[in-house]
Length: 336
Image (cartoon, rainbow, N blue to C red; front, top):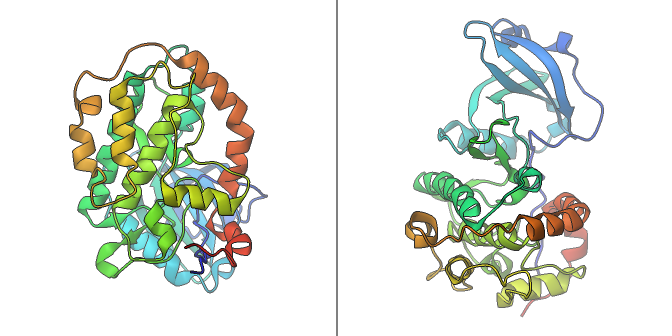
């Protein structure tokens, strides 16, 4: 069986790597009539993002400007992403507030999320427990359960796409980046895409799949939040995918010695190879590790923060190694 990864690169509003394409002065007057354009947040491969302030309310947002000439041939995929995002309104999912367009550019007004990445916040803490991880995962599960209720599959859940709304200690956690999201009402999903290490086994079989792939990815995230390294990692991509297909992972000593059996059972229920018996988001929310008092309150910050710092550079590299970059190396991969 030949595995070929889907070539669409998500247009992530929070990914920036080059000089701006747009200056504030070149914004369409339809945008500037309603919003004051403020500072540049950053520039990505296809877009610039500025902060903006709504003139009537004074509320700040992020405005993403996408040059049409840079997305030629990808308009349908982008329109699908926007169509999905317009349906979403949940406290744990980033919201698309408004869109504007003209012949040269598309402008997306988004919620402004300023609290930073999940891993960074954990490393900065002086105390971190299973209970903290459980609380964070409850927010993620509520957000994904909401998406699933709309028949939306995210398909790229990972820590880098979980951002805090603001810098306050009680800030809510937000699910971002819907570049790979699909609505199951649009037909069967069969194309292999996502970020290596978080992909569910059924994605690699090239058979139709759906919502359970998000639950598998949440299981991977839980695993990482409790030990700060991934359940599946190999520099050899073929071996990585073979390991995922077999659903082989361990709770290694000493990193898991202080983690409760309830937490391990929770991970196992989310990372079951057979998606028919894998936890749904609703089932996971009812698990006592989330809804009860089984999450341990022992401080595991020292070991988790140390591992996160050690794996930080590698994690950043793997973040860039997305579905598009995987194509060249995966074209001839044969899985039995």
